[in-house]
Image (cartoon, rainbow over all chains, first blue to last red):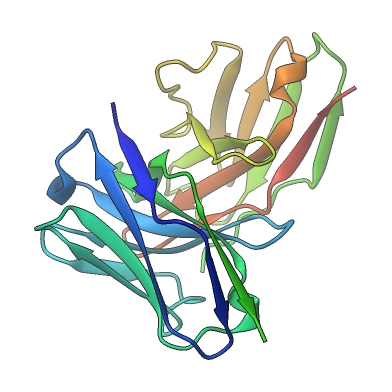
Length: 121
Length: 106
């Protein structure tokens, strides 16, 4: 059974850095893309970025390029999303999701439980 | 970024059929997938590759795609189908979600 377990909720202040994690199980970590999706309070899903842990190849949405960094450590089978300087507008739930390539693009098939990030001033 | 447009809301009575559309100029060249999200829960994949249903998803969920419009159809609506539904599509460089449709079962 495929499962993705994310790190716990975070409460941070504006300007602080943060790194959240996602550890999948039930499949070979290095053979699927894995990515992050943002959901701001009361809002819809926003696709952020994906990474292929096998070679660390990455794809970013133009909306998030330069705002966050996606990474993966194949030795511990974990994906990460990090911020160098948080803004209040980064307050959201962040979902990690395994992505499947369908010969045209990538789509999320299995999702983590979400990590709530709250950023206050 | 990927632009996909969905109606904000759809309302149907139990037992009826709900249709949720997703429009995007790149859909003729890309597959669409659909997700169900209930309050406080993570999204669940209900349709992939335009029309395929993952194991465990009820047969009343179906979908199609024609030109720039993908459509999710839920037949024999049940109270438990009340949720937000999102379409997704993407190419080899990025992906995107529609704004979401709130399905209300009257």
